[in-house]
Image (cartoon, rainbow, N blue to C red):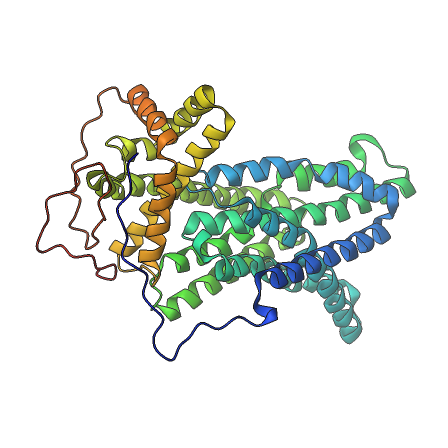
Length: 444
């Protein structure tokens, strides 16, 4: 059995800085418990508020109709995240925050602000307009952005670029739209019950068509702008403090502006909604879709460019950078493992692909001078995870390479020259030592 090479020891603790046990409020289980409690309480309160406004029957009808776009939107964002899939717990948290905490903040703050403006101006009509076009965009986008900020701060390893920001923001907004649609559709159903409306002429059908059929992507589209801002900040060097603060804020302002324009569409005349939809929302949706798909392809190119350094050192097989840089080849490798060794082997290959992708992104950041202080430790962790899964992953990836490219050409990239030495693996022969090549993770 091949044994991986030893790693240099981790840096010791400087004198006078002995390790101290965290306070009780700093422990992970305490933070998790507080967060779960907050989300559960928010969910119970929002459930009671929506049910109070729609009635039990209206709530059930709204819930049944509002759930339609959710699987499609979640699947779309998960597809974007397939190159380096983030953990499901981040998506669950984001959806729960949008559906519970952000929705509760929005309902309470919007109602309070609109009521206060109506009392102060003695003009309920203008208060409703101001609330929809100014107050609601600011409150709702800020509440949704809080989820992106929390993941950015406390799950930094899972938040490495634009796609991660788009996915977290989009899933958060999907949860928010889900709760909001329950409220609107349930209220519309109650209106139909009082007026006797039914069929295609009912308020419920019209609300369903506008919110679920025509614009299920509206809230995700707004909040994705905030996510892109945080994604750009994640790609910035840690020393660029001003840029890392201003770009997410600029994305949040753009999200508020787009949200305000969308809410103002009903004030632009009889066909104002359709005019804003065709001239503003559809082009913006197309542009952002192109951006995230282009970013996804760029991530695959990064994998193909960065991993050959580990191939020559012996950590990866010769064809693995090619396979890991192709979504089709990666899928074939997982299917091969599942077919020959079962579902557990398929999961192991999927994990191998994810760890290798994270390793490529880590090296890319380091080569551009954006590596964090934990570069060496993180690289060691990722290589260790790859080494543990190589028995199953390498035959599967080799099969995928033969299937998609029968005669893969050897990669032209050198094993060194990026400013990062790659520790050799056994039993593969290490590269010829280069006297100018030292292991310095902070050289750009």
